[in-house]
Every structure is written in C-alpha cells, then in structure tokens.
Image (cartoon, rainbow over all chains, first blue to last red; front, side, top):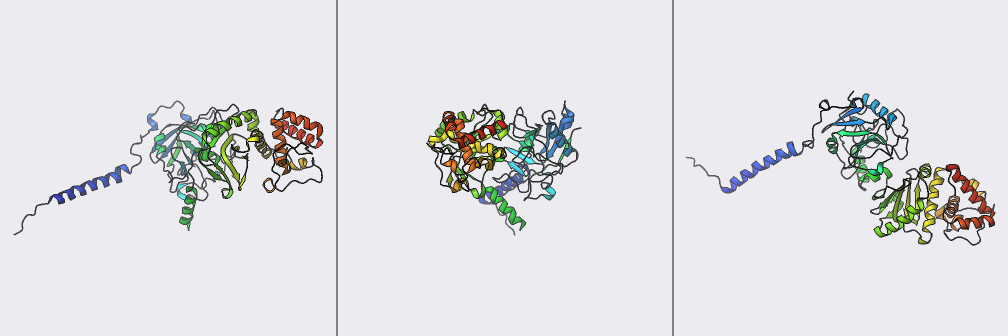
Length: 214
Length: 242
C-alpha cells in the first residue's frame, strides 16, 4: 500500500522559487532584452508633411526615423545625400562609430556595409563620387537630431559618411556641412548599439533601408 | 588571426573615452571653456591630463580653475586683436588651454596644428613673456598655412653669410627670450635657433612692442629687412596693418 506523502514547507518554498525563476527568465529573454520595447513606432503614412520632396525615411532596428532635408542651407550636400538614398547605397550601412548619448555615424559605402564590414578600414571608405566642398553655415544650430556630413580633419572632404547628433553640441556650429534634422524617431536612434567605452562598435547596428518619401 | 586583430584594435581604442570634442579635435579630456568670443575663437581647457601625438610624445596637464580664469583673460585679450576673417584665413579656430605642455620631454609654450585649426597653449609658460609668446605661437599657425609667403630660405638670406641656424628648435641651446641690447640681426637668443622661430620672434615683438621695434629698425638693417618681410607677408594674407 502506498502512503500519500505530504510536501514539506521547504519543498513548497523551493517550488515557488522555481516558478519565480522561470517567470523572471522569461521576462529577461522576451521583454527586457527587447531594447525597442518602449520606442514609439513612427508610420510616415500617417503624418502630414508640408515638404514631402525633402523627407527621408531611415529604417533601423527600433523603427523609422524621419529626416527633413534642408537643400537651402547646403544644396550640393543634400543633392549628394538624396542621390545615395535613391541608389540604395545606405541600405545595410553600419553605425560603426557611436559616441554614447552624443552621436552616431554611418555611411561608409566601401568598408562599412554590415554584410562585408572591414574593421581595419571602416571610416576611410569612399563613395566613388568624389569629395564635396564644405557648405558651412553658422545659423545651423546643432540641436538633438542634427544630420550632417562627416569629414576628415580638413574641410572639403565630405563624401558619403554622415552623423546624427543625439544631444545639443554648440561646439560643432560652423564645423560640419548640415544636411537636415530628425523630425520624428530620435528615440530609435538612441537605441543604436554603443561600443564598450569606445567609439568604434564591434558587430554594429545598421540601417535596414533608407528611402525618400517621394 | 582576424579575431586577435579585432581584439587588439578594441584594446587600443579602449584606452581613451571618446566624446564630441575628441571626435572633432582628436585631443582627449577637454571641455568647453568659452565659445562666444567676438572673433569666433573657441576656447577649450584640459579637464584631465592628456597625451597625444606620435607615441604620446605630447603631454599636458589639467587646468586649475583660478589659474585658467586669470590666464584665459590675458590670452583672449591678446587674441582679440585678430579679426575673424584673418583667423579663418590662417586656419585658427580652437585654442586649447592646459598646464605644463611638453613635446618630447621639452617644455614648450604652444603647439600649433593648422590642419586641425588648433593652437594648444601652456598657461603656465614663462610669466615674464607670456603675452608675447601668445603671438609667437600664433605666427607658427600663420607660417604653416602660408609657407610660400614666409619662405625660410629668403629669410635666412637676410642674415650674415657666416651665420647658421640650428637644425631644429629643440636641438639648440639658444633658448633665451630676453631682448638683446645689441641686436645684430636677432631680437633674442631664441631667434638664432631656427628661421621659423626667428620669424615668430620678430612677429611677436611687432605685435606687442611696436616702440622698441621702431627704434631697432633705425639701427639694425638686417632686422629692418626682417620686419619689413613679416609686415609685407601679413599684408598679402589680409589687409591687416601691423
């Protein structure tokens, strides 16, 4: 005859502990690990734009980023930027340089594509279109979400790389060629992967696609 | 092998913390001191000690707040005489202030970098000649940008044929900054180190002690030629009356 064995208090505590452990593990893997959880989804179709021909949509891991381009400030730079977007050159371009809460940089077409990234040379690639003359403007304020062409130490070396500021940087006024401003989706950019105390990122996040609204 | 190289790359970059200033100037540990100067110069100071250059051969220490406030006032007062257009032409935009600046273990007043449009200044350098040294260092930026105007061979020909400059400014023991009583073609001992330092010394006296320069012109034909050469060179860059 088999006797029913009552569970002891310690066994009950262990059982509850295992259930809680399972619950927290599930939370960590499927909820907290999702870095995009609290990022608002931006649907460009639901937004009324007054300047549709100068609206660009960059899709990253956490959603859409809407950029309003400013050809009045820097016509040649914006023309180059639009050309590269239309040619899908920026698609899968890595955010290889990220300074935490400060700026994110992408657009190395030669060495910075996520499918074939060259960690030794990234940042030195060329588009093949030649460099542009800097179009500097002291009136362009470097607020959060400023989109500008990157350059090397000297002016007139802008090509295809660009960066977006994640905070106000008044020091940059008059230093870089402005392209436009992020008008929606800055939170998605703030979730871009940061290097561990470094500005260059291993296995970086990247642009899924970049397109013009029209 | 590839992973090892990536690891090495990571470790190499790991040694410094990047920020927006480092991204622009490639000098770590700086903070903004003043951005709104009348001629567009942007002043930064070292918030921590920093090392830069080939094998970190340039080093400078963080600034003390009181010292920084005192010296930056003198520096900005002296640099305010240069107008924005002139500074744009010579490629000077950023002034980095730090204490005890050394290059290859030799104490120096300043290090110009016209490509990055930056002048690093040691705010502890020589109290006696502090103001004059500011203009001296600024001249190096001018000369770096306009090498053909301030040609060292033409300059050297002003000297007596028997005279020879040293091979470099740091490999000479001609370091005195006091004005000679008998100039004989050179304002200071340091003028005799190399041609570019000689030019910078002449320029710095023109900017800070016009009266002495006027007296010297009448007595020293070599220096008279040198002063005229500097003045004409500056006029070629900007209609800037020295």
